[in-house]
Each structure stands twice: as structure tokens, then as C-alpha cells.
Image (cartoon, rainbow, N blue to C red; front, side, top):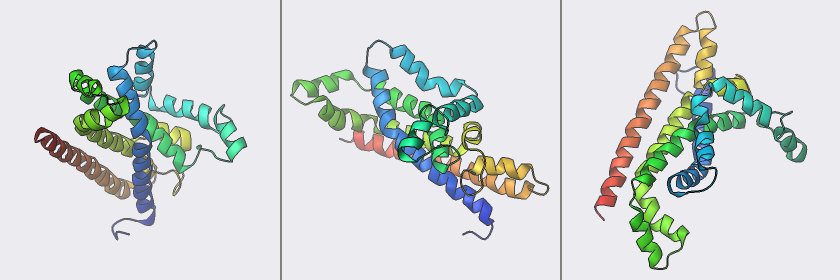
Length: 232
């Protein structure tokens, strides 16, 4: 544990990294699938799906958090079933913080991957299909390598967004030290305490450093992948 961080600050940092990691990992497969459907699909409800995906960007985060509480809380229509059948709940747990972060970051993830998909010439995929490749094989061998920079950029953006999520998280899972207190909620808590400015400033500096680091890593990885694809 770094000497310049108190145990409470270190807890908030480690929990934020854990929440952001799992929020990104869990949302990545459905993010790719939804982006593929929006970029390539033509079906009834296409506009509705697009609207639902981007809704968290438009709604106040507190509203999103409240809707999550109504859905996944112990008394929610889905949360009560999870509790009765499996003894599991998202509310006021770190898993709920990860769920809230994933929901808020999902639109950014989908948008980055969708833009990458729309930049791919469909004729390349059609050519592979005419050679007898199935849709899954075409996606894995042709489409995915071409959109990999977009996938990486979307994942990093989602991770950074999850690290900074506040409104939906505090509404859905509160601000429990060691359980649901992430960097943003810890900063908020320290700002409410007399003499907490120094701790809040340390966590702000860490948040800025992590966000900048995520953007730099995203740019470097995207350029490397793009260069490898161009060299093939």
C-alpha cells in the first residue's frame, strides 16, 4: 500500500479499478453484438434499440441509478427474483457499482465500435462469404481484425467512464466504504468532512492521472493495431 494514501483512500482506488475492469469486460461482448446489429442490421425496432442504447447519455445519472434500483433492488421486479432464486443482489454491493458503471459506459463503447464497423467496406465481408465462410467465421477473420482499433478505443473509453461514474452509482449502491465507495464517491465524501480537502485532492490527482493514462494507452494501442493491419 502506498505510504501517501490512507487505507480508506487505497480501498476506494482499488475498488474503482475492480469495478471499472469488470464493467468493461462484462459489457464488451454485448457491446460488440449491439454495435454489429446497429451498423449492419435492418430490422423493426432498429431505431428503438439505438435510442435505448444511448438513453443513459441523455438521462440524468441519478435517474438511471434509480431505475436500476427499481429493477435490481431487493424489491425490484428482477432483483427480487434474483434474491429469491439465487440469494444474490446487486443493490448496495460492489457488483451493483459495476453494473451501474457498465450501463453508463455502454453507449460510449457501442458508439466507438459502431463507427469502426461502419468504416469497414461490406464488400470485404461479402467476398469472404462467397468463399463459403459462415457469418461467425467472416466476423472473426475479417471484420474483427479490421475493427480492433475501434474495439480497443471503446473499451478504454468505457473503462475511463466507469472510473468516473458517480450519480448512478451513489443512487443505486450508496457510498459504503470498502464495499461501494469508488474514487468519485470517496472524493465527494471527503469534501463533506472538515479537513478532507487534502485527501480529496490526492484522489482527484489519481483520477486525472488514470484518465490521461487510459487515453494515451488507447491511442498507442489503436495506432499499433492499425499499423499491423495496414502492413498485412
